[in-house]
Length: 145
Image 1 (cartoon, rainbow, N blue to C red):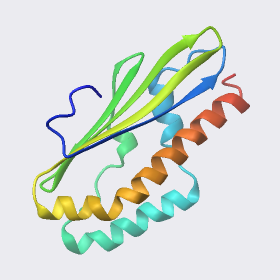
Image 2 (cartoon, rainbow, N blue to C red):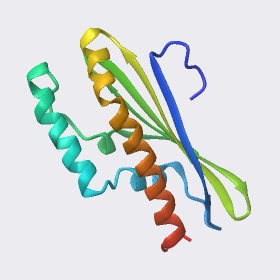
Image 3 (tube, rainbow, N blue to C red):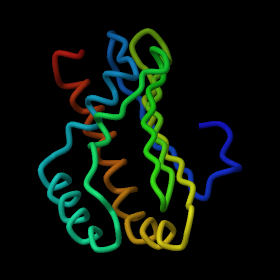
Image 4 (tube, helix red, strand yellow):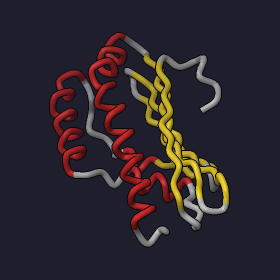
């Protein structure tokens, strides 16, 4: 998530997990996209409300994960309203810990894209923070340890 100059919105959420086993970016993306029911319901509601504005139901984001390296996985989704990029980054911090990060970049193509993102931004931030914390908890409390 380095060059942010050409984007209208960027964020990055990160945390430190304590585990002796390295969690790679592909695993982080899988953990991130295993959302709790309330997030799934929220996303389905968004799809229903936005359908009249031209938001088509397409492939889910987890189907679009591209593994760049052991430490980086990305998701890119572009449409006529905006371009969206997610980056899942993992980096070893020491023998028993590593940093996990999820970053978002958005580029608006028109006013509808900007309006849409303005509406969903608070939910986006809440969902990203929640899913990253959930991934951390799953790693630290499970067989991933």
